[in-house]
Amino acid sequence: MIEHNDSAKTGTTRKVIHTEKAPPAIGPYSQAISTGSLVYTSGQLGIDPATKKLVEGGVEAQARQAMVNLGEVLKAAGSDLSLIVKTTVFVADLREFPVINKTYGEFFTADPPARSTVEVKGLPLGGLVEIEAVAVLQS
Image 1 (cartoon, rainbow, N blue to C red):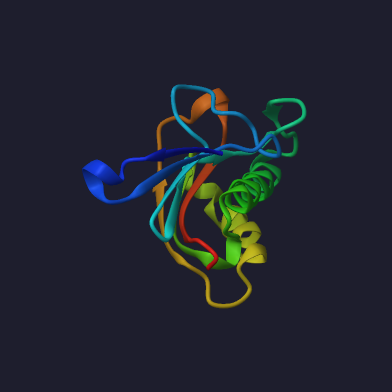
Image 2: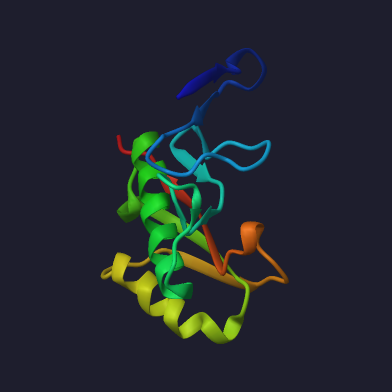
């Protein structure tokens, strides 16, 4: 984790979050940024951190791996899936949403976060689903 103290300008501290337990960023962005009591994650694809490739098994396997990756990024930030307040799910084919929704629901069995779902024309690396989140940091 890299900390940038911007308190002279803004009164807040900005921390760059990085973990080897989730895939590295595939562009000029961070896995997550925390500031104040919140952490904002970048979208997580269904990439296996060990192989750096999309997992096999279609949209269900990719959704599951995306959630696992999201959990690892949140853990590195000092949060976890239970502290998510909002997710955005990007899907390449909205007809696959029932499968994604079922898999997603396995990670939020009680009091799920707010969520938006958007169908997109394409995702990086040909991914089928990408999930980002905003979560509260553990106190």
